[in-house]
Length: 273
Image (cartoon, rainbow, N blue to C red):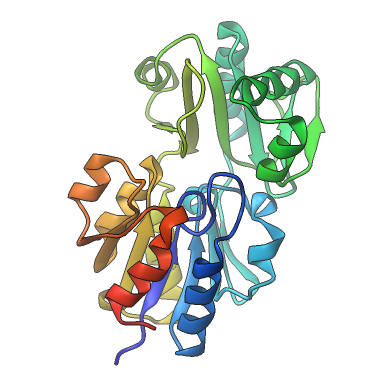
């Protein structure tokens, strides 16, 4: 059988929403790797937010920050950061609207103290302890009073905005793309902001080109809003059982939920294990 290049979302696909790797998912990943298939994490998380447990599993590549950061075999091959002037405009808007937000860099998450406290409250309201929040967050949090000149920002995330995602997109304009959060939380508007033209699909194309691979061998597996472009780009598209209905409708196969052996069942359907 021709070896596959399998691109894997993290939250809700490989890991459950409590930051745990199901044992069946670990089994599936190890067996597919042993069979010679290429496994690549493809996530909206920055690299610093990827669970150490996954980093220690020796994936063949990482597409992080929804395509803004790419590495292959441990080597960085592509990185894109927001232009300073555009970033300052975004920060000004979130400050004006009183939105809780974070900037995501290669080193970790950068926030104001006000946003950090609001984020803790956001997750507390969801029933999480601060320790559980830190487990899911993974990366170090760096506090700064003014984020307008923060360097090396690959993407951004926001919580509890008092305005809609559509309004944020309208105000930020064509330089940025605003999408819903990878998981539903809270009562307000929650989402992620990337630089337009940087997404999981562009990351996949860059990675496949770098290795001299064949797009016909690609598989995408995901569940969240930022997985739509990935599933449209890969030759085979698989949606998790916990994915939104529109993502399921676009998939070649819908597997079970992440916590019901979904990844293992997807790999068996693919016949890679």
